[in-house]
Length: 245
Ligand code: BTN
Image (spheres, rainbow, N blue to C red):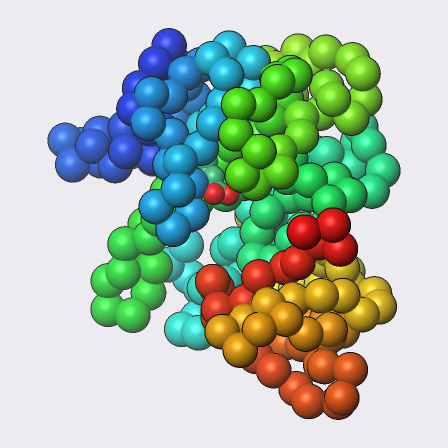
Protein backbone atom coordinates (compact mmCIF):
# COMPACT_ATOMS: atom_id res chain seq x y z
CA UNK A 1 0.00 0.00 0.00
CA UNK A 2 1.16 3.51 -0.78
CA UNK A 3 1.10 5.52 2.48
CA UNK A 4 1.21 9.31 2.26
CA UNK A 5 2.26 10.44 5.73
CA UNK A 6 1.62 14.06 6.58
CA UNK A 7 2.01 16.13 9.72
CA UNK A 8 -1.24 18.03 9.61
CA UNK A 9 -4.25 18.65 7.42
CA UNK A 10 -7.84 19.75 7.91
CA UNK A 11 -9.18 16.25 7.27
CA UNK A 12 -7.50 13.25 5.64
CA UNK A 13 -10.72 12.50 3.73
CA UNK A 14 -10.68 16.00 2.26
CA UNK A 15 -6.94 15.79 1.56
CA UNK A 16 -7.35 12.55 -0.37
CA UNK A 17 -10.34 13.84 -2.33
CA UNK A 18 -8.42 17.01 -3.28
CA UNK A 19 -5.41 14.96 -4.51
CA UNK A 20 -7.81 12.83 -6.57
CA UNK A 21 -9.00 15.94 -8.38
CA UNK A 22 -5.39 16.63 -9.43
CA UNK A 23 -4.35 13.14 -10.54
CA UNK A 24 -5.31 9.48 -10.44
CA UNK A 25 -4.26 7.44 -7.42
CA UNK A 26 -3.96 3.69 -7.08
CA UNK A 27 -6.40 1.65 -5.04
CA UNK A 28 -4.98 1.16 -1.56
CA UNK A 29 -3.48 4.65 -1.33
CA UNK A 30 -3.59 5.77 2.30
CA UNK A 31 -3.28 9.26 3.75
CA UNK A 32 -2.25 9.29 7.39
CA UNK A 33 -2.05 12.59 9.26
CA UNK A 34 -0.58 13.08 12.72
CA UNK A 35 -3.03 15.92 13.25
CA UNK A 36 -6.32 17.04 11.76
CA UNK A 37 -7.47 20.60 12.30
CA UNK A 38 -11.04 19.89 11.19
CA UNK A 39 -11.49 16.13 11.48
CA UNK A 40 -14.97 15.15 10.38
CA UNK A 41 -17.33 12.57 11.82
CA UNK A 42 -20.65 11.14 10.65
CA UNK A 43 -23.55 13.51 9.93
CA UNK A 44 -21.58 16.74 10.13
CA UNK A 45 -20.06 16.07 13.56
CA UNK A 46 -16.38 16.70 14.28
CA UNK A 47 -13.80 14.06 15.18
CA UNK A 48 -11.57 14.72 18.17
CA UNK A 49 -8.05 13.29 18.06
CA UNK A 50 -5.07 14.64 19.98
CA UNK A 51 -2.16 15.24 17.56
CA UNK A 52 0.44 12.46 17.45
CA UNK A 53 -1.52 10.08 19.66
CA UNK A 54 -3.96 8.30 17.38
CA UNK A 55 -4.60 6.91 13.93
CA UNK A 56 -6.48 9.29 11.66
CA UNK A 57 -6.26 8.09 8.08
CA UNK A 58 -8.15 7.68 4.84
CA UNK A 59 -7.99 4.74 2.50
CA UNK A 60 -8.82 4.89 -1.20
CA UNK A 61 -10.81 1.99 -2.66
CA UNK A 62 -12.51 1.31 -5.99
CA UNK A 63 -15.31 -1.12 -5.08
CA UNK A 64 -17.09 -0.91 -8.45
CA UNK A 65 -17.40 -4.73 -8.39
CA UNK A 66 -20.08 -4.54 -5.67
CA UNK A 67 -23.54 -5.40 -7.00
CA UNK A 68 -26.28 -2.74 -6.76
CA UNK A 69 -27.91 -2.78 -3.33
CA UNK A 70 -24.89 -4.38 -1.63
CA UNK A 71 -22.90 -1.23 -0.88
CA UNK A 72 -23.30 -1.67 2.85
CA UNK A 73 -20.87 -4.59 2.56
CA UNK A 74 -18.04 -2.08 2.22
CA UNK A 75 -18.95 -0.51 5.53
CA UNK A 76 -19.09 -3.99 7.11
CA UNK A 77 -15.70 -4.85 5.59
CA UNK A 78 -13.90 -1.81 6.97
CA UNK A 79 -15.54 -2.15 10.39
CA UNK A 80 -14.52 -5.82 10.56
CA UNK A 81 -10.94 -4.99 9.57
CA UNK A 82 -10.67 -2.54 12.46
CA UNK A 83 -12.35 -4.91 14.88
CA UNK A 84 -9.99 -7.72 13.80
CA UNK A 85 -7.10 -5.47 14.83
CA UNK A 86 -8.68 -4.46 18.13
CA UNK A 87 -9.44 -8.14 18.92
CA UNK A 88 -5.67 -8.79 18.95
CA UNK A 89 -5.36 -6.58 22.03
CA UNK A 90 -8.62 -6.59 23.92
CA UNK A 91 -11.67 -8.68 24.55
CA UNK A 92 -15.14 -7.21 24.45
CA UNK A 93 -14.98 -5.17 21.24
CA UNK A 94 -18.05 -4.98 19.05
CA UNK A 95 -19.43 -3.08 16.08
CA UNK A 96 -22.16 -0.64 16.93
CA UNK A 97 -24.47 -0.29 13.96
CA UNK A 98 -23.72 0.95 11.43
CA UNK A 99 -19.94 0.99 11.79
CA UNK A 100 -18.58 2.29 15.10
CA UNK A 101 -16.08 0.12 16.93
CA UNK A 102 -17.00 -0.15 20.58
CA UNK A 103 -15.37 -1.42 23.72
CA UNK A 104 -18.21 -2.19 26.12
CA UNK A 105 -20.34 0.99 25.92
CA UNK A 106 -17.61 3.31 24.64
CA UNK A 107 -16.38 4.27 21.21
CA UNK A 108 -12.87 3.20 20.19
CA UNK A 109 -13.06 4.00 16.50
CA UNK A 110 -15.28 5.62 13.90
CA UNK A 111 -15.50 5.37 10.13
CA UNK A 112 -16.56 7.99 7.60
CA UNK A 113 -16.96 6.54 4.11
CA UNK A 114 -17.48 8.99 1.27
CA UNK A 115 -18.48 7.47 -2.05
CA UNK A 116 -18.58 8.56 -5.66
CA UNK A 117 -21.36 6.93 -7.63
CA UNK A 118 -21.15 6.29 -11.33
CA UNK A 119 -23.92 4.46 -13.19
CA UNK A 120 -25.30 2.94 -9.97
CA UNK A 121 -21.95 1.54 -8.80
CA UNK A 122 -19.53 2.86 -6.21
CA UNK A 123 -16.69 3.88 -8.50
CA UNK A 124 -14.58 5.40 -5.72
CA UNK A 125 -14.68 5.26 -1.92
CA UNK A 126 -12.65 7.24 0.56
CA UNK A 127 -12.81 5.35 3.86
CA UNK A 128 -11.79 7.64 6.72
CA UNK A 129 -10.78 5.89 9.93
CA UNK A 130 -10.31 7.42 13.35
CA UNK A 131 -8.91 4.98 15.91
CA UNK A 132 -8.24 6.18 19.45
CA UNK A 133 -4.83 4.78 20.36
CA UNK A 134 -2.72 6.53 23.01
CA UNK A 135 -5.01 9.43 23.92
CA UNK A 136 -5.80 9.54 27.64
CA UNK A 137 -7.99 12.62 27.98
CA UNK A 138 -10.89 13.54 25.70
CA UNK A 139 -12.25 17.07 25.83
CA UNK A 140 -15.62 16.06 24.42
CA UNK A 141 -17.59 13.19 25.88
CA UNK A 142 -20.03 13.29 22.94
CA UNK A 143 -19.41 9.85 21.44
CA UNK A 144 -18.38 8.43 24.84
CA UNK A 145 -14.79 7.91 23.62
CA UNK A 146 -12.16 5.50 24.86
CA UNK A 147 -8.68 4.63 23.59
CA UNK A 148 -6.74 1.39 23.36
CA UNK A 149 -4.38 2.78 26.00
CA UNK A 150 -7.22 3.50 28.41
CA UNK A 151 -8.50 -0.04 28.03
CA UNK A 152 -5.17 -1.87 28.21
CA UNK A 153 -3.08 0.51 30.39
CA UNK A 154 -0.21 0.35 27.89
CA UNK A 155 1.03 2.52 25.05
CA UNK A 156 1.03 1.42 21.43
CA UNK A 157 3.57 1.92 18.67
CA UNK A 158 1.36 3.67 16.12
CA UNK A 159 3.47 2.66 13.10
CA UNK A 160 3.20 -1.03 14.00
CA UNK A 161 -0.49 -0.65 14.71
CA UNK A 162 -1.06 1.08 11.37
CA UNK A 163 0.80 -1.68 9.58
CA UNK A 164 -1.41 -4.31 11.24
CA UNK A 165 -4.56 -2.29 10.61
CA UNK A 166 -3.88 -2.10 6.88
CA UNK A 167 -3.15 -5.84 6.77
CA UNK A 168 -6.43 -6.63 8.53
CA UNK A 169 -8.47 -4.36 6.26
CA UNK A 170 -6.68 -5.69 3.21
CA UNK A 171 -7.52 -9.24 4.25
CA UNK A 172 -11.23 -8.42 4.67
CA UNK A 173 -11.25 -6.42 1.43
CA UNK A 174 -9.75 -9.47 -0.31
CA UNK A 175 -12.73 -11.49 0.95
CA UNK A 176 -15.08 -8.84 -0.37
CA UNK A 177 -13.39 -8.80 -3.78
CA UNK A 178 -13.60 -12.60 -3.87
CA UNK A 179 -17.38 -12.32 -3.47
CA UNK A 180 -17.45 -13.83 0.03
CA UNK A 181 -20.45 -11.74 0.97
CA UNK A 182 -22.00 -14.28 3.33
CA UNK A 183 -18.75 -14.61 5.23
CA UNK A 184 -18.50 -10.86 5.71
CA UNK A 185 -22.09 -10.26 6.66
CA UNK A 186 -22.14 -13.22 9.07
CA UNK A 187 -18.96 -11.98 10.77
CA UNK A 188 -20.48 -8.50 10.94
CA UNK A 189 -23.77 -9.71 12.47
CA UNK A 190 -21.87 -11.85 14.97
CA UNK A 191 -19.86 -8.79 16.04
CA UNK A 192 -22.79 -6.46 16.61
CA UNK A 193 -23.00 -4.40 19.77
CA UNK A 194 -26.12 -5.41 21.74
CA UNK A 195 -26.69 -8.50 19.63
CA UNK A 196 -28.22 -10.32 22.61
CA UNK A 197 -31.15 -9.43 24.83
CA UNK A 198 -33.46 -6.46 25.09
CA UNK A 199 -32.11 -2.93 25.20
CA UNK A 200 -33.44 0.59 25.18
CA UNK A 201 -33.73 2.55 21.91
CA UNK A 202 -35.32 5.84 20.94
CA UNK A 203 -37.05 6.90 17.73
CA UNK A 204 -39.29 9.85 16.85
CA UNK A 205 -42.09 8.33 18.93
CA UNK A 206 -40.02 7.95 22.09
CA UNK A 207 -38.15 5.25 23.98
CA UNK A 208 -38.83 1.54 23.71
CA UNK A 209 -37.22 -1.80 24.50
CA UNK A 210 -36.30 -4.09 21.66
CA UNK A 211 -34.13 -7.00 20.65
CA UNK A 212 -31.72 -6.65 17.76
CA UNK A 213 -32.75 -8.93 14.89
CA UNK A 214 -29.89 -8.06 12.55
CA UNK A 215 -28.92 -5.64 9.83
CA UNK A 216 -30.41 -5.90 6.35
CA UNK A 217 -28.45 -6.00 3.09
CA UNK A 218 -29.36 -2.35 2.60
CA UNK A 219 -27.84 -1.47 5.98
CA UNK A 220 -31.11 -0.95 7.84
CA UNK A 221 -31.25 -1.95 11.50
CA UNK A 222 -33.94 -4.53 12.31
CA UNK A 223 -35.37 -4.50 15.82
CA UNK A 224 -38.19 -6.49 17.41
CA UNK A 225 -39.98 -4.75 20.25
CA UNK A 226 -40.91 -6.45 23.49
CA UNK A 227 -44.49 -6.50 22.09
CA UNK A 228 -43.32 -8.47 19.05
CA UNK A 229 -43.44 -5.63 16.54
CA UNK A 230 -40.73 -5.57 13.83
CA UNK A 231 -39.16 -2.19 13.18
CA UNK A 232 -36.59 -1.18 10.57
CA UNK A 233 -34.46 1.92 10.73
CA UNK A 234 -32.10 3.77 8.44
CA UNK A 235 -29.05 5.51 9.90
CA UNK A 236 -29.97 8.31 12.34
CA UNK A 237 -33.63 7.24 12.59
CA UNK A 238 -33.01 5.50 15.91
CA UNK A 239 -30.63 6.01 18.86
CA UNK A 240 -29.16 3.51 21.25
CA UNK A 241 -29.99 4.58 24.81
CA UNK A 242 -27.77 3.66 27.73
CA UNK A 243 -29.46 2.76 31.02
CA UNK A 244 -27.70 5.66 32.78
CA UNK A 245 -28.89 8.36 30.33
C1 BTN B 1 -17.62 8.94 13.13
O1 BTN B 1 -18.27 9.96 13.38
O2 BTN B 1 -17.75 7.93 13.81
C2 BTN B 1 -16.66 8.91 11.98
C3 BTN B 1 -15.31 9.39 12.40
C4 BTN B 1 -14.30 9.35 11.28
C5 BTN B 1 -13.03 10.07 11.65
C6 BTN B 1 -11.95 9.88 10.63
S1 BTN B 1 -10.40 10.50 11.16
C7 BTN B 1 -9.74 10.29 9.57
C8 BTN B 1 -10.80 10.68 8.58
N1 BTN B 1 -10.75 12.09 8.30
C9 BTN B 1 -11.82 12.74 8.78
O3 BTN B 1 -11.99 13.97 8.71
N2 BTN B 1 -12.65 11.88 9.37
C10 BTN B 1 -12.17 10.52 9.26
